[in-house]
Amino acid sequence: MLLNKTLPLLLACLLLPACASEAPPPEAATGPVVVLQAGLGDDSGVWQRVRAALPAGALTVVAPDRPGYGRTPATSAPRDPCTIAAEQHEWLARSGLKPPYLLVGHSIGGLYQYAFARLYPGEVKGLLLLEGTNPQHLARVKEKAPAIATMLRVVRLAMTGATAAEFDAQARCTDAWDAAPPLQLPVRVLARRDFRGLEQGAFEAVFRELQQDWLRRTGAARVELLPDTGHYLQKDQPAAVAQAIVEMAR
Image 1 (tube, rainbow, N blue to C red):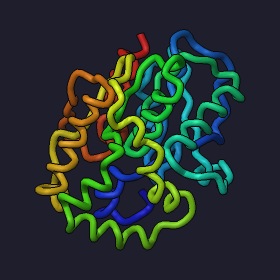
Image 2 (cartoon, rainbow, N blue to C red):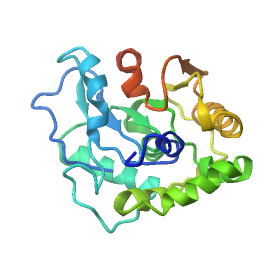
Image 3 (cartoon, rainbow, N blue to C red):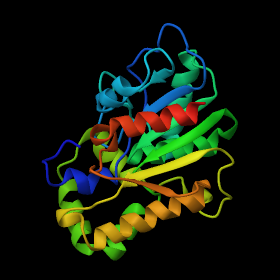
């Protein structure tokens, strides 16, 4: 997030990423192409610790920046999950990175990767969600955690550019999948074990409920809870995230 140290944890669960300043590696390694998508307000640098924890040279790993992030120019195109997923698909094809893809997404980046898996299921090796933003997240927070919802409305006023556009469009285009069968591919859902401060109580209850809802949507077996971490699993537990990537890439 781009805000202060108190609000980012509340916002990160609501945010998103789209495509592509990073050049593909010179030579593809064996196995699927690992595609990392960051959360709202974050560029590809957020994956630095995970990339350092992955075995050198064993995997082809890319982390494209969405329009308006990193060196990728902003766009006037819609910022809904389906459009961003399509942009990622186009970037991968243009870069010569052929499927299958192992999709990894943090926060709203997880929502984008879920949209990609729905739109292009035949090209996906697996899906790894790190506290992925559920399509119903914002609506449920407004309903069940009104104090947090009020705070988010205030924070939204400070957002600009791609961050604001993605925040506003996060619930669009996914309704058709609300009652769809689970994904027919390997999926893992990782989330933090402990909540602190303002996130305890109503917000925690909503968040845990929606992480469980990912099991229905994706077919994942369970929500895997990681200790000693906040919302940024890839920063606080990079080795655990890297291990999950390696296991899913086999």
